[in-house]
Length: 203
Image 1 (cartoon, rainbow, N blue to C red):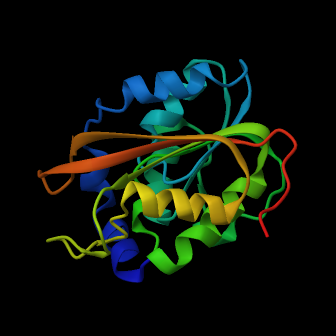
Image 2 (cartoon, helix red, strand yellow):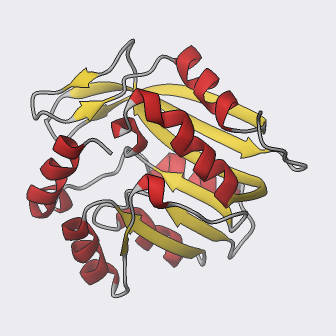
């Protein structure tokens, strides 16, 4: 993850955790509907743990993680369980999860590293597992007014990055708008991918 961006979240963890997120509820519900009841889910960039709490309430076995130790500590207190500090490149599991939920976090991965991070996520998914991620749409990377880095992909660029990462049975990209921490509306891309059942690593 970009160091300046990580520094922002470490320094603003308390303020970020106080935000109330409601726009992703329908997408989370749709994602969970595709995964077996009680299945194992890895959450990347869990923030204050709101989505984790919802998944736990629905009976799923969730491993919440965040790249900021300050944010992980806040989420641990909210959830009453340990939330690990995990940077994306540290993910080293193989076929361990039925689902990976990565809402509004992979959008900070440098463009030249995204395919590698997606490959680690692909590897961590069980065959036929589902993976959700969201990105701010654009045509090239840059920083916002808060100096946070964004990879700003187009749908075609994202499809190419996912194809480089591994084999998928399906990949859908929907668009929408979300109000960010900077209080500005942003055009988003919501990606849901299903790992190939008889998966073989992309060459």
